[in-house]
Length: 250
Image 1 (tube, rainbow, N blue to C red):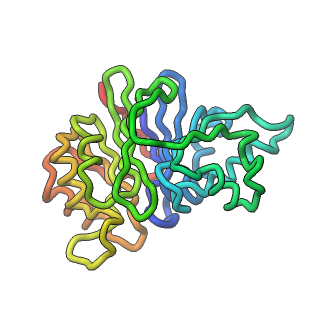
Image 2: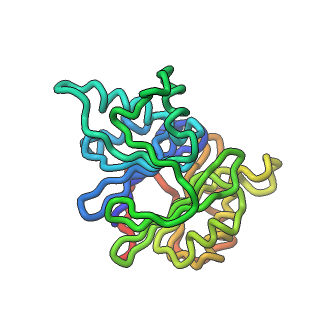
């Protein structure tokens, strides 16, 4: 399994990164975790965009899903006609949400090129991966996901405040891709995002083998976020940066 960071900027694109988007590859299968603002452009630096096999949307905030609209254009209107349908997994109402975002009638909306599947907590096959999803703590319906393939595991938080379900998903995971949008000792909305120290604490409780901090808001000092995470987690930690490639597991 291999993870490529397409975008790791939180809430809106930053000067060096689009919003959240992560490419996971295994066995020739390419899965996108989220498609935030600006991600489709950067994705083209790494792969042929028509080689993507599936898309997973953790929740329906713009910085995690709106470039699916651009991707619809790319798959619907290329020379030679529409590309084959691929699955898109997202929370309840995902098909209507993205259709409305582009000003489309929900019927057919984007269903001519995307086969939408609404997420519920549980386990399912996603290409070569065994996927498990569960709800996490955010103002809208939001999911964390754990992917397993040939003995390796990757867990992605999506956007979340502190929650036990995320610890459960990440238990003994090889790579924990976890949001850390807030700083400690600063007043911020409850039940929305994690601080660096909270991300580290979740990784410690989960016994994650490596922590990769993401959803890094452009106005924050990322080194402060990293220091906070190191105060609660003693394992390997890195900051997710656009263009990085991380092998997962063995």
